[in-house]
Amino acid sequence: MAPQRRRCRRHVSVVALIAVLTIMLIGCLEPELVDEAPTTGGDLPDTADHVPVDDGQLRTELRQLHDTLDALDELYDTVQNAPSAATARSAGLDALARLVDLHDTRLEAQPPLLPAVTADRAETPQRPAQLLTLLTTAQDTGGPLAREVVAALSDTVAGDLGGWLRDAEGMVEMTRTVAMSSDSIEDLEPAVIALAGEATRALAWTFVIAEAADTDRATAAAERAQAHIGLIRTALEAAGASRS
Image 1 (cartoon, helix red, strand yellow):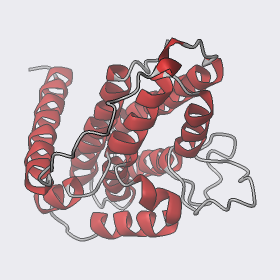
Image 2: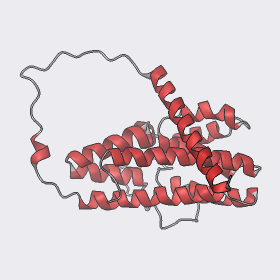
Image 3: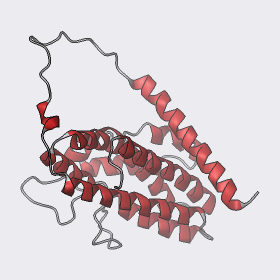
Image 4: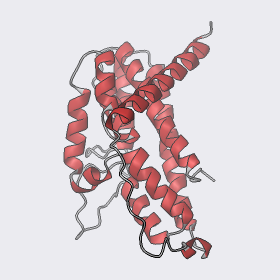
């Protein structure tokens, strides 16, 4: 069987495994919903949906996010085909810089996906994370697409949006701690799945790649990180936030 076909089958199996584990975790954590009494007079119609909005800037930033996801895909492919652990770690560090700004000079002009420093409302950061920029633009834009984008960023991408907004440093450190908690990929899987948000999970596996002692460990982590990036792309497309 050709190497490419083996990689494809292995990737599909990893995606399926992660999806199953995620569903199992959500089933365990999902709280019981309590029916609330309807408000007096019923729900008001959302007339804002019928008002045209200029979402050009939002769509531009969404394309930039898709560019980041594409770049991460390519870097994870590089890890999986790396001839040495050193090459794999180097690609992992590049992927890490795409995900979060750890004061690395690799991508000074490219904003990361996630913040590494808690945003100061009194200052505008030099390179605001794409998560924060997109949230702000979507909230300013309004309309159906903006609402779907906010939901996808909050629930699927960030998971714990409040954590990333209030304590970005703590979120990064927690994710790194989880990534370094075991030498076994199998033991790491449930710990990583327990993290909130697909970007957070991808970040954890990318930390593993950046510290991997051998190509097998780096490859296994890259497959899993790539699967989480794929889930982000799927969520965005379901929200109508495709590249176009």
